[in-house]
Image (cartoon, rainbow, N blue to C red; front, side, top):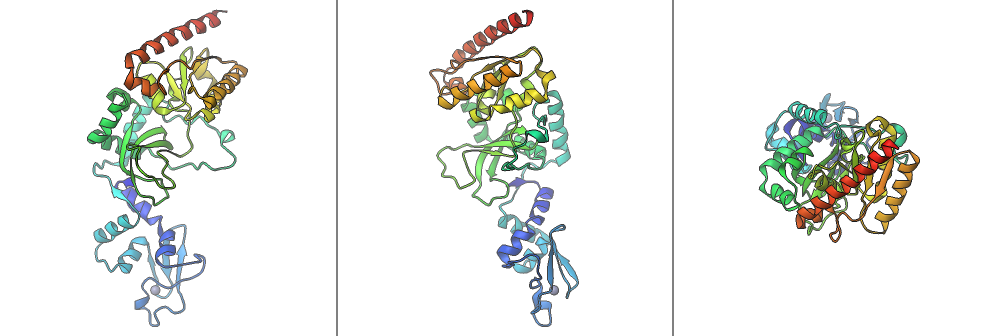
Length: 366
Ligand SMILES: [Zn+2]
């Protein structure tokens, strides 16, 4: 996991409980256990006198009268001397890499916040409680804006990441617009899987997509090649404005490929997430007054069925829409067409957009 020094310190302190279980074999964290500094006790702390406080992530020994955090545990357990040595050991134990291009978190937050006020889509958190999945399978994660900032810096300095994005046909302007980043050693928060190299695509301030650069990698349990972290929102919802024609696609990279031609486009994440668009429109009806949606999901069974479902939903809510599956044929998806046949994609997009615009105006004046 990539973070700066201060975030790392905070994160590592939060691993206290895990450390007690794995390194001190503490079975029950509610009862006392042997002091980490047992050698200083008269009887090696045979009657355990140490207690864990989850709120502060610290342990206190009633015999020594001293309170310890994870760094003091690691220092004693591994016989280390200074804090630097201890901190390095803690980073090793918990797979933490310290970002090389460190700026202050609030600089990043400011920079990202400014971008978001220009383009409100990324920070837009349009989903109220009523739209959350009751199963609670998707957890909210903490604010990621400073992480995105670091990843953008790393991407700018990484030839490999820039090459990957260029190979997918994405231009620097598009890459900057979507604040795409790069994490050379990403792993899913809360897991200790082997880190993998990822492209980081922000979805909201609390959710992102981490995509591997190398599709041939053999991955672990939490390491899907396109891993979504946090509850995902409609991708690029800022494209939805009153009286506009907006294309609707499945993938984030497909949406970016279309936006590159100046065509407003949102991404559902996948065909099965088609409700994300209608949820967004119900919560932001003013953004979409008089808008027209062209639904262009993938040309497979799921894509066709969900496109029908979505057009019915939009229809019911009084939004104009049409369906198209001819944007990328004969290629797999808009992004594949972007790097195989950019002129063809541009042509078909502009023609489709003009058609939709005519329909929209005709219905508006009807
Ligand atoms: Zn003690």
